Length: 578
Image (cartoon, rainbow, N blue to C red):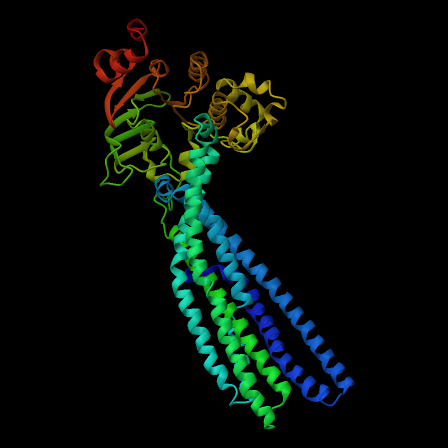
């Protein structure tokens, strides 16, 4: 938790002044029992109404000043806690965006969401309580004990006996419950995962009538979380009864022994009332301390989870990289004996010893069976992942030496899963080129075979896009994502199986338009359809992460057994030979 103290630095004023005002409130609270004792011992005993009213007015004044101090402290605590939470959440989100795809996959999206929301919220509450109660509660315990000693040292021995018993009770309770809080946060991750899967996959769940099974899976996770919370609750439930037994025992002792001293003339009735008030203040303060221990235990678990993300050094970095000029006469893209494994050098290789050159302006088809490494291959070009061995070069420069902005600005990527963001059609198309004019956007839509349906939309380019683009069909979303990439006029266009939802006629029209309207652009088309890649300048055939063949359609059909099998599984012999 101490590693996150840096977030308190911008709020030094609030962190210092907040506890000071809370301390003033606590001091006023400690004075109240003394005023009450004077009212009883002087005003009530002497039937002096004016004295009672005067001291009563003093108590009201102390209450008003205490309330003002508490409100000021509350304001400072709210400012600091919300500020710390905002800064931490922003930094955490920024840091997550710098992590590599592999690192995000490792931690899991649902866990990252829980850490940015629930864990940061726990730390926000901890900051607020730090300012409001961390100084006040211990001060009240010590202050009440000291005031009791000032009233009567002998009777205050009851305090000295009761306080350690209450502290021991708190310690035993907290030591039993503390380990459960880390477990609870992990179980929240699981609920977040199941909820996210169900909301994203609601159509699939309904299509297979799996609502009951998914509800049972959620109930199981929810019951597991509830079980952990109940186990904590059972132990925590002992806290109040035990502390109240000790406190009430101490109050009985105060009344018993104090009554004897009153009879002997050593103490007055008001002083006994003050003793009881101080005992109550101590108990309430210790209960607050107990709650603080619970809260800070939760916060410590959350801080560990947040620090775990901050401690992750981004797997890919462009720090120190400067803008690079292309090497003269170099291939647009070159793979030099490239190997890649998702689990690092010791894992099974998804790509193995891939070497090839792609010239500027070429259209390259990449084909292979499921799991052959096609998407992995193209993901190495914009450096979404980094080659385990070998080099990937763009314009003769290793991709590791490019600033991300330059490398990914040169590359337009259309992923397998079409993703649109909440906004409008126009705002989605402007992602790759914020300065693009309407003519550029319309040209991109025309090339992507999306212009016809966009013109028919009620508001055209300004038609709203709901979250995830759910108000468009799969084929429409794919065409819009292709248009988004084309709007940036990239040097390299990567279509990663991005026409799978299109009918054959639209797919053919798309490929024809890309050939006609992307002059000078290097295009990589990843597909499992032989028809989609057969007109490419060169076709790369991947089989189990290795290059099984490179060449034109006819060359590969005659010489590459893997490619021939793919073609004949989809086309007749006559169609494949054309």
